[in-house]
Length: 214
Image (tube, rainbow, N blue to C red; front, side):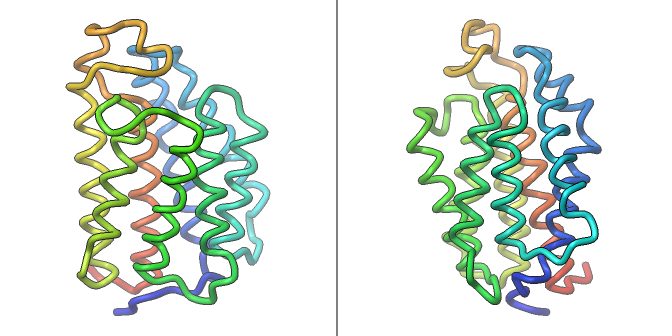
């Protein structure tokens, strides 16, 4: 089993992320509709589909693709999540730019950089019922892991899922759903769900490149 993958081989990982959002478009809309305006699935699908069409069949590095995805989400989709996801992916792309290979440490650093950039533009932190509740535990799990790359990604996936699930019992502090107060409790945060879907798809795609067989 490999402990790194070539940056230049990132295309299938990027397309796995695209497919994951496309496949969950309706679900994301349904989740968002419970305490939000219901357009999260539509907006995310629009951005990821535009990106997927632009890179289809191209030889594109993982870092380059992340930056392109971030730019699409930042400039070409509606809703509040465009700037948030745009910032995350652009920061990841910048962190990985120029690397020939990507291992656990460099991916963890890219995610740490993305989290840091995100915290420069939003006030939400863990416990506020946002995508931060998914992102931060996942970043922490990968950053603190001492296991091999594939095993670390397995824990990373679980941390993202646990973080997402934690939002069900939280009261929203930001966004449209924050107006509901206690009524926002009992429902998953849509941003945390999409973040989990994306991070898990990325992890699965990378594991395929690492030739994980189980």
